[in-house]
Amino acid sequence: MTGFRLPANSRIVKGITHAAPRGTRELRTVRIYRFNPDAGVNPRLDSFELDARSCGPMVLDVLIQIKAAIDSSLTFRRSCREGICGSCAMNINGVNRLACTTATRDLAAEIRIYPLPALPVVKDLVADLTNFYAQYASVKPWLQTRTPVPADRERLQSKEEQERIDRPAACILCACCSTACPSYWWNSERFLGPAALLAAYRWIIDSRDEATGERLDELEDPFRLYRCHTIMNCTDVCPKDLNPARAIAEIKKMLLERQS
Amino acid sequence: MPPRPLSPHLSVYKFKYTLTTSILNRFTGLALSAGLLLLVYWLMAVAGGAHAQARAARLLSLPLVRLVYGALIMAFCYHLIAGIRHLVWDTGRGLERAQAHRSAWLVVGVSIALMLLVGYWAWLAGARAP
Image (cartoon, rainbow over all chains, first blue to last red; front, side, top):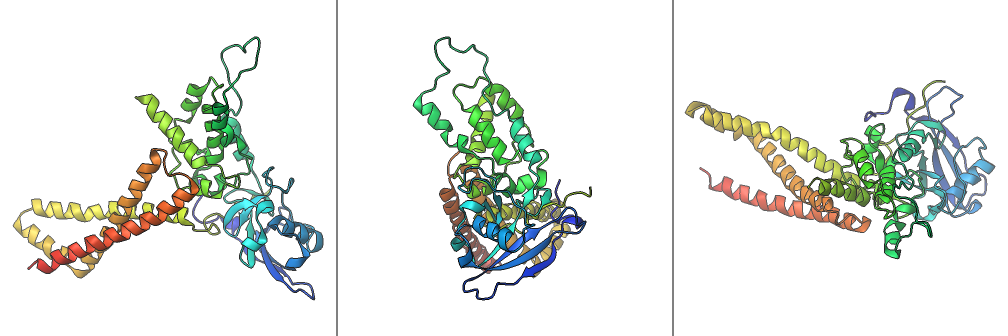
């Protein structure tokens, strides 16, 4: 259980300021959470001043520019740079988002970047997602069947049946939603969190899946599912415009309906 | 290896309409639970005979206690309207981002209107009382 206050080793101390290069015309200040696991000291908040014209339009471009030109030890995850891999999820100006799809011009002049909230920090903006992935695996995110496969064809679905799972299946597991959820901050060991529950929902409503009852049984738990109090931070932040809050509400409804 | 630090959460996360309406609902619920003690005290005094009742009436009409009533009425109005929003959500409706944003403002607006209405009514009742 996470407390309201950060543990002593996690409190952020004042960091270093890297002054803007001479001739800067469009000053942009970026404050970034830094933690070096080898230094044995608390995390700090460094300031990087740079010329906005020296880098591309997205927050990820700014991070890459800082790493290339100012401090090569700056550590963050990134891959696709187009919002499909989910690697560069981080807390930017107080909200979880993908650095690659967040334009700097949509943000305040000063940008503050922290790792995803309430997770153990590996280094700088890289948080440990082991528990998050384990929770995803725990909902068995694959097709479970009892009946034999039809001899002459695959397990087919109608267009409508596919459309029902289109949106929930588009989750990229960036963890923006789960780490935006206060319930998940306080109970991440027991509450599955919006991302894993959205995945569970995607398989529960899959017309081809035959383990719906078992899947619902697994979720019928005061913590795994019912720690969701419809705060709506998950749906508010999802960079893919998915709706974990509604998926969870639908699961709760299904549990209620099967009791009657 | 020393334990990894925990990344900041409450201290850095932006208080958008989502967090704000939710935490207000929590706080007002807590306040109302605590406020029940006042009601229990009053009920006990009523059951305890004329002497206890008169003492309770004196105590409960102190300005400070009246201020507490005012706060409790406000808490009740908000908690009621926010609770209705949660009931609608539990039917699976109104859970899209834009809808939730609109209903957050609706809850604030309607509960303030209700506070004013109840406040006006209580003020009238207070003015009529001897």
